[in-house]
View 1 (tube, rainbow, N blue to C red):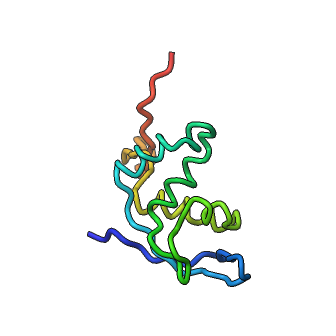
View 2 (spheres, one colour):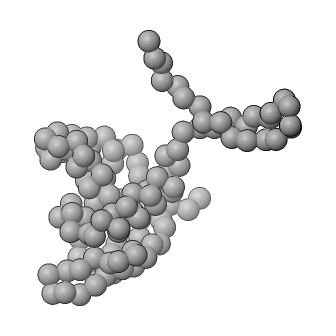
Length: 120
């Protein structure tokens, strides 16, 4: 099973010396990564910061950058942040489960997302 994935950022992280870093590695997230991130004081103060903290835990390498911190993630261009968020979801299979359905009239097969939330 693959647990570490290579990536190349679309824009790249620009460090304080103006050097651009694009290649890196992201590992699969653990339950502990997500649980500890929800306890981070920055996340408790601002829930949207959760993405920053989680990515700083699962990105294990960014060429030429010593230690990936939340500050490094904060300094990414928005295109790179969106790229990493999408990658995180893809490699961790963070998608709702689907059911394969067949149309009784035409016989076409399609995927239907399952929604387990209750309303009312």
